[in-house]
Amino acid sequence: MIELFTTAFVTFFVAIDPPGVAPIFGALTNGSSAAHRRAMAIKSVVIATGVLLGFALIGGWLLGALHISLDAFRAAGGVLLFMMALDMIFEKRTERREERAEKLSEEDNTIPGTHEDISVFPMAIPMLAGPGSIATMMLLMSDPQNTGLLSKAVILGSAGINLLLCLVIFLAIGPIMRFIGDSIAAMITRILGVILAALAAQFIFDGIRGGLLEGGAHIAVSALS
Image (cartoon, rainbow, N blue to C red; front, side, top):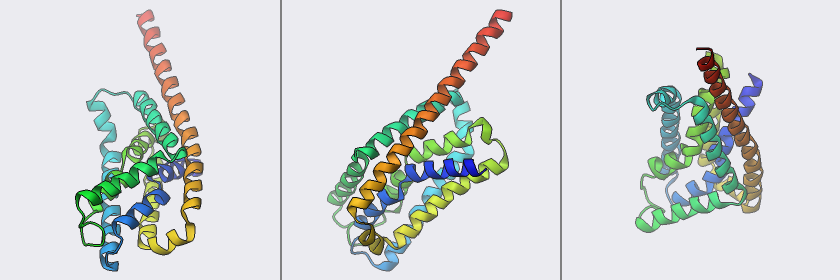
């Protein structure tokens, strides 16, 4: 369980990227009242939690309805996470988030410094509950080794701790950003990107191996028949 928690926590931490979303939240709520900033922080985390929980509960059913094997989804999710890791290493992900925030502000110049609701978009979706975190949730929950209730509780708990961490950072965004600084935040993001790349490669290898074994089993059964 400790190994599962460590893997799930690190993967969700990299996918959700609390240090990366914190500056965006700070920029979008810049000039807002403390009460509005607190409301946006709580609402965005609650909505993201609901989205991830929904995929955790119906992700397996959705794959079955679409006739997608777990191994195929595992390999595809690994590729997606690997691409995200490359973006983090070369800071492309941070640039896109900043551009998205700037574009949102340009389209509606009432957002910075006002009581505009930014909790659903872009904070909850896609910054907290984005493709990476959703894929991570479905990958871990659909793993045959994580079929027990305790394993699923550990996975949900690791995601919940990361979202709670985001909430804490959002509520204290000003002092934290002044303490961390841009250079340290960029260094943390690159290190996490390397870790995510290794985890993504493992997902891809597991998916390919599972698909090959399943294909070999089907061929053997057909030969015996």
